Image 1 (cartoon, helix red, strand yellow):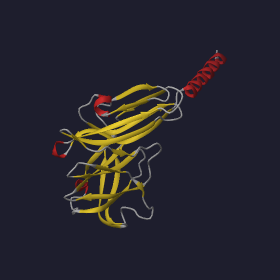
Image 2: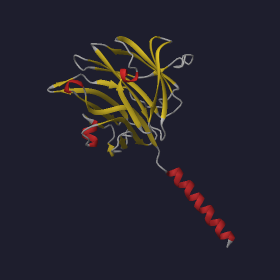
Image 3: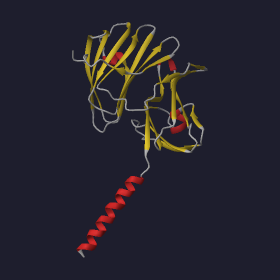
Length: 255
């Protein structure tokens, strides 16, 4: 009986290992933010997304909004050399009236479909020019990241975003700079688990004075985090997406 039990255990372990080996792989691509939200002057901000399958095989894709309370996701196939486009990803793909979240794109297999995203504003019969959003095909984490070219003036406003896709709260230490290496102010922000914090730059730094070419230096030890900024022209609502760059290791927000 002991020998039979041993054989059964070995077979179960082998079956488990085989099932694990046969489990389909998935490649994940992150768009740091997509949305359908209302902004200043009655403008509604939307995001278009295009997925392109440049392979000769059918690709199975799943889209999800990891920080939205609805936990929405959709799955579909894209034919060989085909494409799927959503002019308003939140409304068309997920059927939501309002949402702001990173977009997770998962493709079964070892290679992702190509992803492109643009943000634009609709105000009455006016539509602003689409502004490309940088897409992360690999690990976007780095302990020190910087956002350059930020403005807060009569002509421009800036929104910043911090996404935490971890299952625990994440601490960000953030320094505001006008001259590289010289902090004007330093603050800390705790972003809850699976949350996107998106607000004006003066919400982080109430003492900020009007000006252009501000930068913020961000430090965090948590992976699965994303940061970005958007500089918006007040007169037209045209937006300029700011993606993070790796900051100089010798300059930390605490210095």
